[in-house]
Amino acid sequence: MGHYSKKEMFGAIGAGIAGLSASLYIAKLGITTHIFEKRCGTEVDGVGIQLTPNALYSLAPLNVLDDLIAESFFPEKLIVSDAHLPGQLNSIQLKGEMEHKYGFPYLTSSRNLLHKILLKRANQESLIKISFNSKIISTKDENAVICKTDLGKNLSFKYVLVCNGITSKFASNDSNIRLGFSDAKVLRTCLSGKDLPQGILKNINLWMGKSFHVVSYPVNNESDLNVVIVKKNRGPLGDKKKLENELLNPRSLSVRNQNLTYLLKDVTSWSVWPLYRTGIITRATQIYSRNSLYIGDAGHPLYPHLAQGAALALEDSHTLYKLLHRCRSDKLNISKVFQNFAEMRIRRYQRMQVESRLNGYIFQQQGILRFIRNILVKNFGPKIMEKDWIYENRNISRI
Image (cartoon, rainbow, N blue to C red):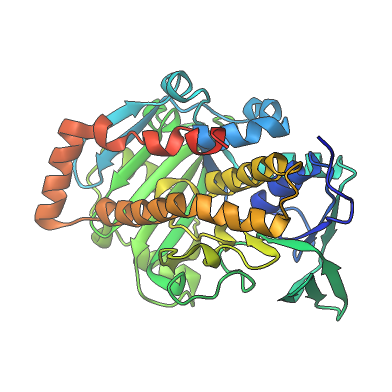
C-alpha cells in the first residue's frame, strides 16, 4: 500500500493539542503538514487536564505515553460531595479499575506537559513544519484553500485542518453552535500539595453547590492540586479582583463541607475566565467544507463538565488517520474522507454536547431537585457516574 503524494500537503491552523496530534498522525502517512500558530511561544492556557482512557487510547500510537505517564498521576477515586453537607455522597474507583475495564488508565496531568511532549515529537518529525507568531486572518476554500496571513501573504494548501479552538472564526459560524459568553465564570488556581489532606490530594473531587461547583485533582505528579470553580455570574469580566471577591463571597457559597472549606481557606489568587455558551451540532456540514476539516473545539465546542475536550480532539486526530490510512489504495479523495469523518463523528459530538450541558445543570441544582439528585447519587452513584460509552474505544477501533 503506497503513500500519498507529497502534493497532498496539509495546512493546519493552530498548534494546540488538536493541531499537533493530527499533524503527527498525518506524518505517519507520509503527508507534510505546515502548522500556523498565532502565539509566539509554547505556553498554553489552563493548568490541569484529565486524560481518560479514550484519550490515552488515541495518544498511544504517537509514542508519547511513556513521557506523559512519567510526570502524571493516577488518581485513586472520583469522589462526589455536596458542598453544603459534611462528608461525601459516593465515589467510584479509578486506579486499576479503568485500565482493567478499558485497557488504559485514567490520568490527571498538566496541560502544558502534554502540549510540550506533542510539540517535541512534532519538532522531531521532518514532515511537520511549525510557524509560530503566524496568524491566519482569512481562508478561501475553492479548488485549494487559500490562507491569508496577517502580513498579507497568501498561502495555498490542497487541504486545511482548522484546529484553533473554541473561538475559531474559520470553522462553522452557524449561530446555533457558538452563542457567545454563558451566564457563568470559571475560576482556576493551582495549590501546593505539601500540606493538603490525602483525601483531597490522591483523588479527583467534585463538590456540587447551589449555583456553583468545584473540581480538584492532582497535577505535576501529585506535587500540586488544580482547582476549578464554575459559578453562575452574568457580569462582565471587567475588574477581575472585584469579580473574584464577588464570586468567592462566603455568603454566596455557604460551604459546609469540611474538605472544601479547608481547600478554599488559604487561596489568595484566582484566574478568572468567561465560560463560552455552545449549542448542539445538527449537520455534518458544520464540521467540514470542501477542502477543510474542523477538529477539536473549533469543530465541536464543548462545555467542560465531562472532562472530554482534549480527549475528543485526540479522538478526532486518530479517527482522521484511520480513515486516511484505509482509503490510500481506494482512490478516494481526501475531501470525501472529510465528509466521511464528519458523518461518522457527529452522533458522538452531539451526545457529548448534550451530556456535558446536562452535567453542568445537575451539578448546580437547588431546592427539591438538589435533594433528589443527592439521593440518586448516594444510592446509585457508580451506575450514574460510570461512562462506558465515553471510555470504550469501539467507535475508533472498528474503522
